[in-house]
Image (cartoon, rainbow, N blue to C red; front, top):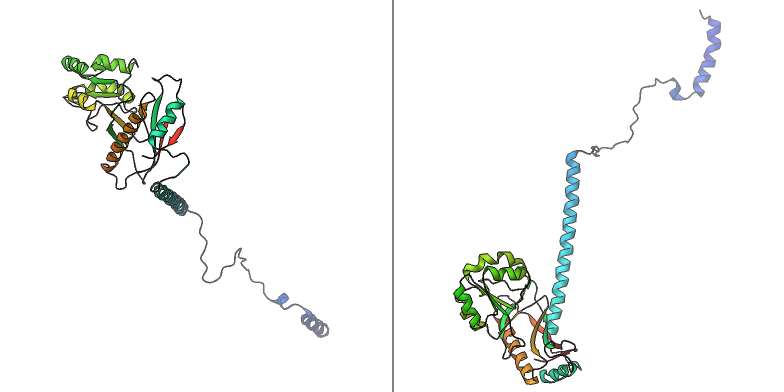
Length: 306
């Protein structure tokens, strides 16, 4: 038990120690919770990634990529349209160059370049450089030349032996059915034109991949399939088929053995038939001819005005 004397001595010491002590030293220590990331009012709690949120982010990325590709495609389309409009504007004006010649003079130069060459192998080719509108597929047609550059080999596919014999008499080079198809399949014969009767079309399925890319596959749409193949042979005599390849059109229209007048006549007939095909085309905008070039087998190319 503490005596009065001891208590009297201890009270001043306790009072002095209490005055110099920290206020929290004698306060009760309550348990505290330390937050790793303090939050304030209005903040939303960060959620963990769930499969649905990951899928939504992936869809957002794909949508952004699709928008970027669409913008690039639109930019390429606009650039193509600007280039096409520029080419078509230039095609409407006649190009004046030092080598621009009339057809007769160009024919004389090309004939001189082929001196000493065999006449059977030297040909004169016309090349048209075209300014095409957007989304233009191709243009094909037939022109009649006053004088063909070479004798054409024509094949007639038919199952009827009588029609085949009549076709040979009418000017066809080859005529027949299964035997003729086998010769084509084996590469034994070549030709520049072909006609067929409707009954012979099933026979041509085996050579469709051979004749199709060359433009020699008979079809009703092109008018090369009919019961009266003799009439087709008569109407096709002297006709030259053409087809555009991209922005160019190339066709053999003469030989170097032709006179300059005959070459000029063939060029005029070809350009007349080509412009007629443009007029009959179903495209809203017709292709424009930017350059006409005549060239020979071993000679240069000469730009002409036709």
